Image (tube, rainbow, N blue to C red):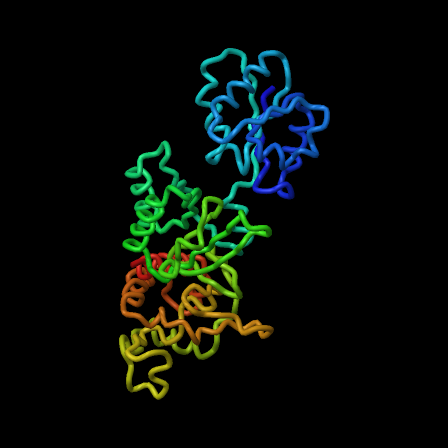
Length: 355
């Protein structure tokens, strides 16, 4: 059996399944730095170390040892299926008969980086900026379409000492297609412990990045709170409808409320002038999602909308009004159909917050 084993980003992150596969092997083959990282697990085994760039030779050697009847562990950092040895191996497997192979997954850099940054991943794309074998035009196309799709983007192999153009081109595309204030997380594993930075797209600098850095670029809903980078999934926070909100929406559904800017209100402007007052009380309250500026009042269990101006923008109001009648016809529908309302909220954030 050939086990293509992902050992994760560090010795501490190796899985039980990977440990078992290495323990069961007679021959262990890998890049010398990966082998050195697990040297304590290799007593009594035949160890074959190869240099960087010898991926094909490693895979061929693993097959050769397997055909001799030996159990082989072919070592890959991170996950072997994400820019790892599984990709190389399966390009060769059709050359041989009777090959038994098993892929042992590992923690890939995107997941490892995300765990240190908070919870930045939702729907996401992982893209390598290495143009050694990939045309730069292909990399640029992938970056552009991931940005236009509002995907969270994880970038591998961003910059080396001699290869800077792919990052510069990718950065240019990102600036052209997503909001410049979008949060960006960097995990630089060449530092021990890893260096963790949370910044914004427009503040990102090449000086913060090297070949061992993973970048995670947020989407239109990603925000930073308490130093953590967060991309909300959209869970329902159950909460009773406040009596004042109930009174407002009883009039709203009877078309008795002011649409647009209500300068006659004694509290105007409760946010920034000019503001659209169509939704004096937010139909999504409480959203529990700080991406538009709301926040929990610490230790009180109360959601504050004080810093959320998104609901009072014209484009937001237009988007909500285009779909709200399909979801809610009376006040109680705001609670009954909360999932649908939060889905509408997300749709409108995607539509209004992208550049």
